[in-house]
Image 1 (cartoon, helix red, strand yellow):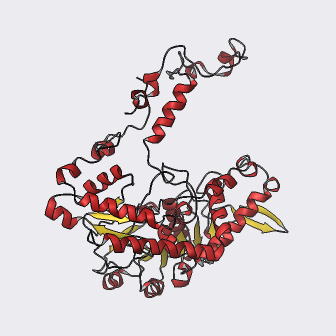
Image 2 (image 1 turned 135 degrees about the vertical axis):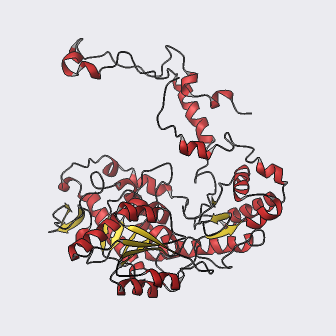
Image 3 (image 1 turned 60 degrees about the vertical axis):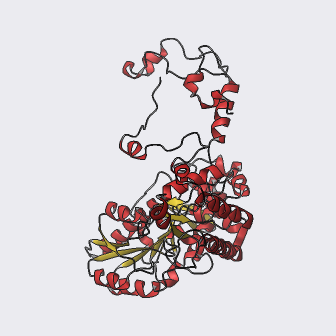
Length: 484
């Protein structure tokens, strides 16, 4: 039985006069605040902070940590989100004093080591993508999308062209149309065909002289490689448009296929998904972008450059769209990604993708005995199963199944995405999971699918919170802490 204290808030555990710190005497002369700080900015009483002993604080947060799932404690088969185990070696390297003790305002000559690492990362990302222009500045994948579309808009403005439309696939990540709208374009949706790939007839009918960019994910969100990607890119280029590759699924093709080679003009990486870095919890993140040489002058400034044997942040870029993030970017995540790439090298990166694809196909083959998989018996790094038959026969939804999976010690797969598959269960085992883990995951599914529907409707049974009201949380979010 869990200790009752572990479920209480710090404010509920608070006892007046209890403390875990000893502060030195206040050395600010009495009355000095009145001279230095306007009276309207001074509080009339101390903040209502909890008063606790050190043991209370440590136990509180340690107990909270045991309520969470994490990639260090559980298997995370989150399709599209790519929650894979990250080597602790990269955490240690990114925590070295020469990395974390730097200040973003230091002169370039005092941070040559870090600038060299970032310069090499730019080169590596360019080589992996086949696109020579690189910006490490964007703060996340969606931010990378937006930044690349802003680069495209600047290029069209320079050419004197006013195009209004961005094409996105109906299976695309929701950030694609959102990014296009924020960059000032209207979105036109392209349908998927019955095979899960882009409907070429629908796509061709919608490409026009008004098409600025086609945003496409390859491999797509169904875990399928767009076989006609070269033709698709050629059609867009013939119309004078650009092709943007959503790089969320690069985990499947490292060292195997380069977006620049099959026709993409721009792309972003999710370094925490494809390489290494903390993921989830709202950040921190990074979303580097790569572009073709004719788009390179429009990249955000600064970029890391090399001149006369010295590395520096190059801000002298007259066609740049400007800075899109404070200072240079989230170098902590970038350092982890660089360490991952240098550790594995080209052959190692390809092997990582080979194993990611192998694991996904193994899991697909075993789960297809239990669940419907609408789009074939082969995939890339992920696949989408469907609970539609289970719901039709037993009234059990994808959400019911996903919630019950938590009781078995596995995080739930991504549910209800993409929208093109009813009762979608999107799964991605990644390259970091063992065969034993995948087999245990399959057996959990087997057990769950044999359980009474009423037990599944009430799942999960073992978690501190069972089924929060998602609609209420979305409509009435509590975004700030208030004291009791």
